[in-house]
Length: 504
Image 1 (cartoon, rainbow, N blue to C red):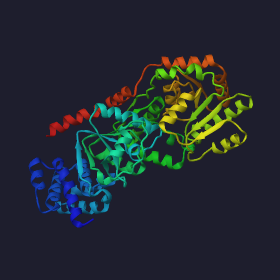
Image 2: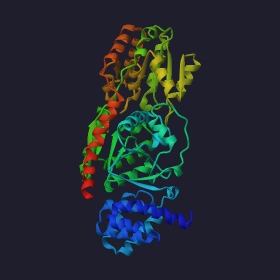
Image 3: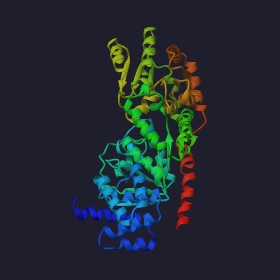
Image 4: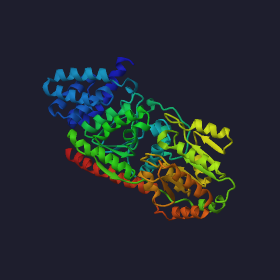
């Protein structure tokens, strides 16, 4: 990049923040200067020094470097500005800019978003991820898009700044659950987004490289960061997840420490995040407001109900289990129960859908059972349509995770009108307790064997569970998305808008 392009990009970023750091007359005059960035930067430094706050230092650092600063950078800048002359402060901020420059996105135009809502959909949009969390994002964000104004954003490749979505990324999120081909994103097509006195919503667990900058944003920038809380599995069941996942979650907790609100998807996640929040007093921090907003379970479609009688008498019933193949999802117990029942002469096919996890306790057993001629299939990837078809074809499903804050396979099974055997505590018990499920202790494999055996032969029980599914309270993703917005965004946005108007 040439020196002229660097200066031009710097002038654009400084001009973008000047209305928020200078009064209107000075901002206009400085923006019209033709002698490059020098006079504009000088005016900004003097203004920030005269009205020194960490938030104003955060915004100036963001403009100079083209990236969000870390907490230590904001602290250092605030200290230095408080004791230095304008020339010394200018030298410091230029040195900081050289050190922290976001070179990959330096040419992107910068847009400062004030008094608005910014929604971070990075992994859903950029990577097309389809875990339970990202399936929820694909349900919620399109609902918000229909009813509210907000700016969806992703992180730059360097995870130093936020930018707008490309058309392909926008489709990955707002296009809903429909599968779409993965398309590489281009940062050159995007605009860098700097939230200022806005609400920043985290519906995903951010990548570790972004968490430190998000934590600084939440702590110092004057923006109000809110999040959906899914579970604390990587912290509380660290023995059952890879160390990298626990480390990643620890980074996320540095953001949670400074969030204003958490909307948890069920009783389990609410208990876990409330416990973490209550410990923050020991660090002199205020607790985020934690509220439970359970995931919705929609009623099955009428055309699914009409096929129930026929599927109840299939010659070879299908039993479905969805979940990543790792210890915490407890697929090994499902295989054990299936083998017990096959040895007893029960006839059914077992379908496992889910990729291998950090340690796979399943594949070796699957290989042994298939060599023995057992009716067993393993699918490591499935499209949304294929997954829904499997739920509909199954006589019942099994999801007996030992720790799960989400329980999405339980939700998906019930939405397709298919009874489920699931864990008798935590989020899965909360969802399954509403009807349509048999609850078992995942550590007591005999209970699982008995429950699977009953549903294979007891059609009266099966139909009772299906009637319970029909009779569950009607919920919708639209209602859930609306409740989320009202709980997370409205209480934070309205005071900000009022304050921004008063400052003008």
